[in-house]
Image 1 (cartoon, rainbow, N blue to C red):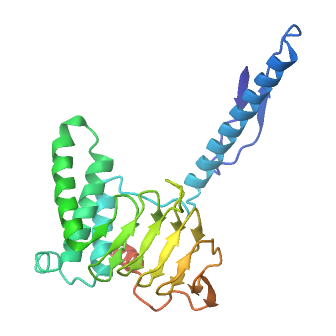
Image 2 (image 1 turned 90 degrees about the vertical axis):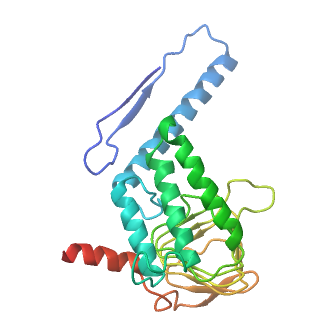
Image 3 (image 1 turned 60 degrees about the horizontal axis):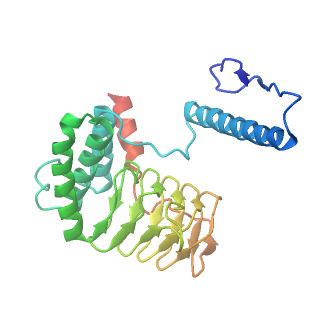
Length: 264
């Protein structure tokens, strides 16, 4: 089998794609059918890979970023600090448990993503142990690489997030929230856009998508997608109740940090 596609231009769009397959005339029909199935599978895989490549280079908003460098690590910390209204780095580090937890979270993400050599494994396990111990004390079950920068946890209390969930920038989340999979699923978790406001005791489950700038009311049960940005959803099951969204409910810390860096 021979697979060929033209080089991708800067836009990431595919110009042409062809597959040529030689089939022996002596092959049985069932063998030809099996080979045709394999070709279709390979074509689907390549097409999906090229589509993902195009989304990455175009900066698609549904691809939640992670810490991949020291600069990313500093940006995440600064955005989280602003989101929590922490005036300085150290004076409240020992008295503000949530700020301490988020610092541990970002440090663990940095070491997990950027320090992959076996030499650093003992340090990573030590950091994970400290992070896990603080998580249990505060009631949080938040795995690494789930929340984007600008995370603001309102209060200590039960907070459960599946490791397959992805939440964008500037998320304000309250105690009692559960973000997980539907019954019988393991990785079919929600994808929540930027600037989300999640009220107390909200339940968000299943392979659903929530658009940017959405507010989720207290005690809401969200089990279907809401792709309209800037709305407020509430109820059991959740439905759209207004078009106000999360605007004005809290500050967008990543916007402030980026603006401050541009002004330097």
